[in-house]
Image (cartoon, rainbow, N blue to C red; front, side, top):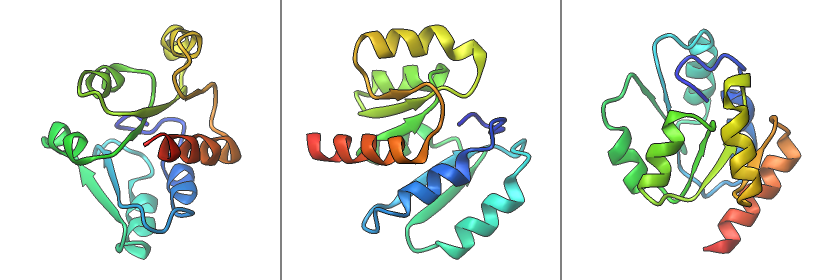
Length: 130
């Protein structure tokens, strides 16, 4: 959700992912995430299936091991798409508007803004496609 998570939705996304108990989650963020302490607390409570990576240089390796990604329609999405990793994109900033509209038009799984019920539906859809 961006290295600094300006929309503050990392924990909200993690709470939705928690509804899939057999799912292992790798969350990548940066030291500039203003909610880093809250995020660390959440991850410590859910160590069993959530891994937190801060300022990681292994993003490509993590993507390669993943079944899908949840990202913003930003530069990271280009990497996800290049690696042919299925994804859900959530628009969190105005500068993502054009890429979001493109994804919507091409029928990729994307959200104009975060909504937990819709994210759960999209995850179910993504999982059932495989």
